[in-house]
Image (cartoon, rainbow, N blue to C red; front, side):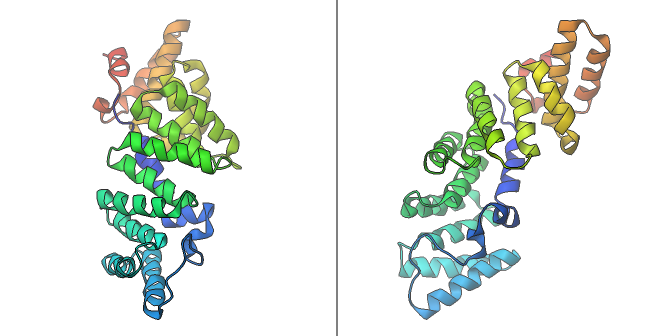
Amino acid sequence: MKRILILIVYVLTFTNIYSQSIYSDYFDGNRTYCPKPTDERSLKIYDLGIECVHRNQRLGAAFEFFAEIIKKDNNFCDAYFWAGYTLRLSNMNKDAVIFFAAADSLAQNKSIEFKQNLATTSMLIGADKYARKKFEEITEYFPNSPEGYYGIALTSTTIGDVDYGLENVNIAEKKYKILNKDVQFLKAILLTLNDKHQESLFYYENYGNKYANDDNFNGHYAFSLYKVGKENNDNKMLKKAKRYYRKVKNKKELTAEIRAAFE
C-alpha cells in the first residue's frame, strides 16, 4: 500500500511546540520526568536551550547545550528529549529518533510526550512498525489518551491492517473531548479502505472542507463516490466522483484499485 500522506499532516500538527502545549504543560519547561542536574551551569543552559526551542531560534546552540548536559549526566532523560526535539525541528529526523528513544527508555514509560514524539518521528523516517509499537505503548500506559489509538489508526494506512485501524480510530474519536477534524478525515479514509463507502461519504462531506486541496481527500472521496454511484446506478454521483478524481495532482500516491476505477 502506498504511504498515506495524511501522516505528514499528523506529524506537523502534533510535533509542533505550540500544538503540543495544548495537550501537555510539559513543554513550558517547568517540570521534568527525570531528576534535574544540580550544578548551576547545567540548570542555566537547560533553560536557555528550552527558550531557544520556544523561539525556534539558535537550534544548533540549543542542541549543544543539551549535549553538554548529557555528557555530565547521561541519565537525565529530559535533556535527551529536548536534544531530539531540536533535531526534529531541524529536520534531522533519523538523529532525532535516536535521542527520543533514549529519553523514552530512561523515563521508564512515565512520559506520553516522549513516546508520542518518538512514534511520530519514526513514521517520518519510514519506521512504521516501530512507530506502531510506541503508539500501542501509549494505549497501554496512557489508556485515557486518544493519541495512541489515533496513532495506531494512522500506522494502519501504511502497515495495511486497515480494519484494525478503523477499530482504533473509533476509539480515538470517542476519547477526544472536542471534535477533531484530523480524526474525522482519517476515519473517512479508513472507511474507504474498508469498503464502507456509503458511511465514509458522511465524513468527507461534513468534515472535508479543511482538506479540499489534499490529494488523499480528493482521491479517496472520489473512489467512495464512484463505488456508491456504481452500486446505485447514480450517474450524477459518478460524474461527481470523476470531478473529484481530476483534482488529484499526484495520482501515483493513490492505490492501484482507486486509479483503476477511473482509467
